[in-house]
Image (tube, rainbow, N blue to C red; front, side):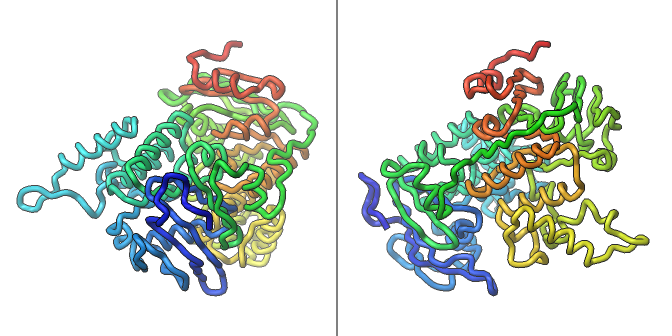
Length: 508
């Protein structure tokens, strides 16, 4: 392990040394080590399956370690519950929100520790006032009394951040907190993180976005295959060096764009409108073409994709596939006509978490696999095995529950489920959100191969390098309207961001 960052106390606030954890025959953590110092932001990076989440869950009291040591203030601790970890001053913001959907925003923030007033009654005014103060500090406007069900991923992440700040934790662990945030929201979060650091808190920041790691963090620790690899001062390393440490090899090309012949229009959208959400959206996607749909969070991109597929209603406009008009609100018919939708929130909308990988992959083709109305388990298993192999899904067995897989492998299972239907149009929302650099490259290569074989791809992404690296054309949305269209050669970061942030509408 390297020395403490310059100007930081040599003794870490939280130290982990050679921590191990197994689940049956699966070794999740072989040798987890990290030092978190007060007044410092420490990045933890590694591919999905590297052991980062298991390490975090041991710190949080979700799991108990098998061996190794965990020291807080130089005293050994062994948390047997999340309550013990929180009581010790540790707060965790997980990659996927953990909110109660039927409760209000303020109830979620103070769950289990509501302030009380006279006669022991919950002081709802005090809760609400504190929530408003935290949101003001974060620079966001969220109604504390609103029920959380239906909130965007971005808003849910902000509520998780508010919950952690309300704990006044000495150790704050952020697990992919920016995955669904816009550039403005990310910078706002960074300002809060820096202020917490300056107050003397120790912060662990987990991200697959190297630009964020270099912009925010003082030190970085790399893990690979469940084990500690190296700790380095940010000033003394580079993105290429970190990639080599993470994957054990050079990732020569993160955006492997293959040449593809652009054919006829497959998907046509004309004047699609949903009051208060998006208005007058018209676009085309051709065979062999990847069209990137860019814009800030809340621009209406995901809502347009869901309306095209029939998940959400729309008020006017038409959707046409291969020259045939799709009836609105009929996802089954959309799938039959060759559309597939890979949603942004894979855990809630793309997977049945407590079902096996086999069952998840075969969900969309079970009717086709049945004979005389009976589903053959062997046919289901064969189909799942074929697609899991093609997408290189990493799992010990296909009967493993999908909810236990890493984020990258969950994304591959959702892709496999829809590719099994052999679609001609793929609508894919945030294809690499929350997955590691190695898996990103694999997903990008797959999308490029699908386009090369003639599939029409509409790719929604908040990551500008991904849009610019993969798209043949880039469409930009702002506040529910299309505000820009660029061919690949003209799609510069400046042009796309201008269209995403300046109040101008696409003409023509």
